Image (cartoon, rainbow, N blue to C red; front, side, top):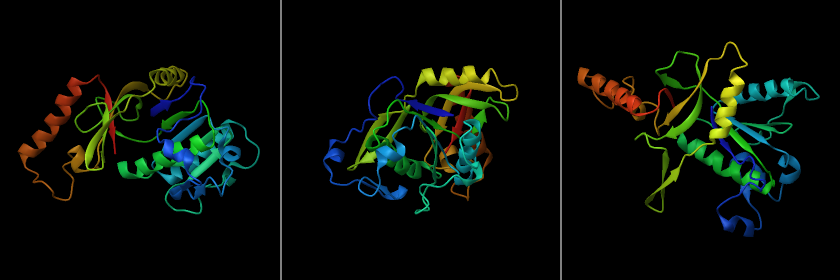
Length: 249
């Protein structure tokens, strides 16, 4: 679980692009929503928790689960996809909870996050906590362990995200909300069958070569030295970080 929070800020969700507030209309293309075609404050203004994950089916199932947990009126099987006019992402609103898919890979996640943050801004949302839910591999962890992310790191194991803007590499911090992470860990103590730890999460731009998987299509030769290099890459970095850690695309 990766968590970001604006909790306690008591301010609207902010965007760092002043141009957005001067636009006559802002169209969220991949959500099939817009500031002129939809009353975003009325539709989303009460959102407090946003939960995102890769799979559309998984996030629909999560929305149905939350519907039951919050004892919302109606049939949980009939939750509606707000983004049904597009096949890029799915979006379900259950009370103060927004459940969304982000697809697979950094580009897909990036598109979703840009439009999600703009959506929360236009909807005048306050004190929003954002979670990323999903599966990952693990180093130094028993299968089935839940990892609450303390630090999100890139391919070089630094807590940063690199983006190319106008031909230049821009580096942004991936700092997460430590308070929320600790609250989640505390909640896990009440559950019997979900071993939970706080750890680091590695994200790369590619599922195979980016993570040095030897089961790629043949972009590098699977020699003994290559296998050893892959193992060394993971083990050396693992020892340099706070154990344990997980990795996802």
